[in-house]
Amino acid sequence: RHLQCNHVGPFLLTKLLEPNLAAGSRVVNVASRAHSMGALRFDDKGDLQGASWWWPAYCNSKLANVVLTAEQQRRWGPRGITCVSVSPGFVASSIFTGLPWPLNAVASRIASFVGRTTAQGAETVIFAATSPTITGTPEQLLLHDCKPYAPVSAARDPQLAKLLWDWSERIVNQK
Picture 1 (spheres, one colour):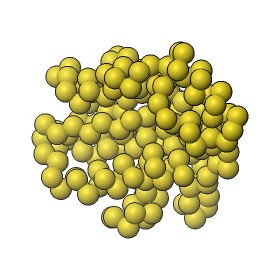
Picture 2: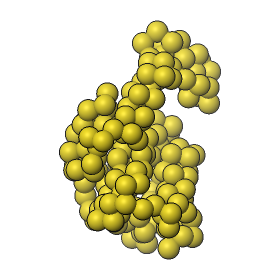
Picture 3: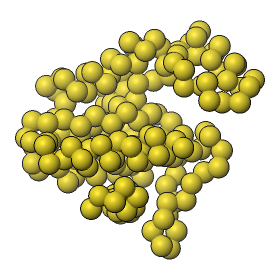
Picture 4: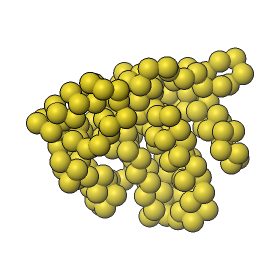
């Protein structure tokens, strides 16, 4: 479910919005520093292999967000569209309610003490969407705390990005 919610949904939304994106438009994808623990593996038929446990599945979906952003910037950047991914940080939200008990209770309790508020989590998202300093340079592929954050090398792999893009188009039937 993580991949469908965190990657396929945003991919479809931006594909449907693409005809309306003009120079000066901005696409902001919400990723996570957890992308660094993700892996995107495709089989011989070009199908993305999924993870069965929630944490690797989440990390994989967040890596897909950063890879998608890099590919959007490669494809749409020449048209003057800026694409950036952001990590809002560890936010105390309802994200853990879907976990089995007692994991959800423990994670929610920890988040209430050390997590950011939802307003704090939104700061980098808003910055990425509105700051004139965000121009789509490779260094700005991923932002955390309103500053560039170096993504893993897989996030910049053009072959992986093409595989993910092609798979995503097939999944949502949007070529």
